[in-house]
Length: 366
Length: 53
Image (tube, rainbow over all chains, first blue to last red; front, side, top):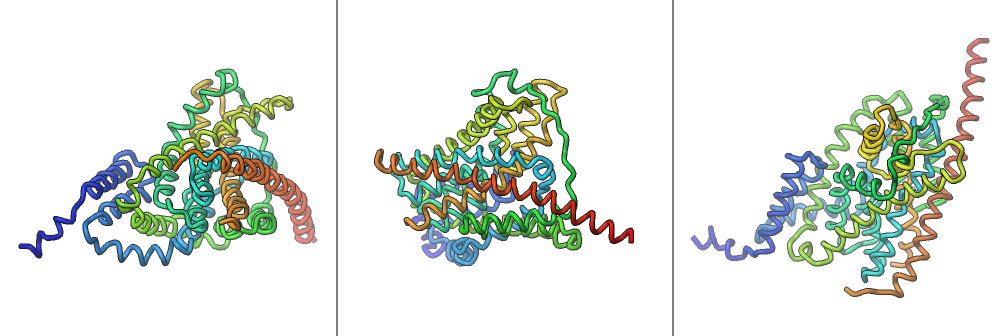
């Protein structure tokens, strides 16, 4: 009997708490449909990695070294994400890229806040990148900077991405008036040729690699995925990248990251602080975008609905849908979905560039 | 873990540099997109002219 039940004596209360956290992730994935491709395997892995003397840890450690420690999984996931994105609304109105830049404010604000709270620079930068609203970028940066809190950062990044429909409307209503939210915008898309669509991912990759070399892998894989989509001759590969590759890598990523969710390293006060800082990052991203919209309105004859600025985060397409719905809630005849979608894909580009800039600035110092 | 004012002050440099840095990169990309639009229109015109011939 000792052989069968002996291991039970190694069970500790923190392990049981981690089971509850794992179960909560599975619940959110299945019942609330919050980022299920990632939260479900992560929750399941979290439970199994918190069994006493769990053999799962050894197996997942191998996967972690093979796919996360060397940043392979997030980069592969970027091919799938790139293949999913239609840059059309952005190419139709390139100025929207500025909203993508403005809405990264939360990243840099949080970097300072995390430093104030006493986190090491490498951890502060890794926590700040939660504000990229982009899971793979968060993993890539946290791993490259060898942060001590990779698991908590990933949990926070994906949780807040799923909470965009709650966080963004709250923040936007805090800093805008009903009149501002009701501003209508004309949509007059410019002509986008197929050549432009094909050249865009190539040119962006070259520019990003030249200006922020550390972002070359992030931007390059994202844009390669987009080139698969736009080239028109690799439809089956594009579909495979969007569906099969993205799903498979998410599954492996979720399971693998769970190995860093062991009770002794995860149940620390810093985890709660990281969750708090992640929320701050998302909130200040939204504020940054909205205030930039208001700033533009000071000089522009054609008024911009400042909510479009808030869509400049990377959570695509959720953020643009939330903003479009908020505009319709204020005025049923106010359609700003295309402008919001343009800002949203701009956020996708800006977030990976932000990741590259963080690596360029902080990487040499750690 | 405790409040670290010197680290906070040092990080302000990264806040300003990083955020402005993104605007600069985005500005370059915007210019490239407009350039691409112009260039690809010319390419498409030439291709169409060749086809007509």
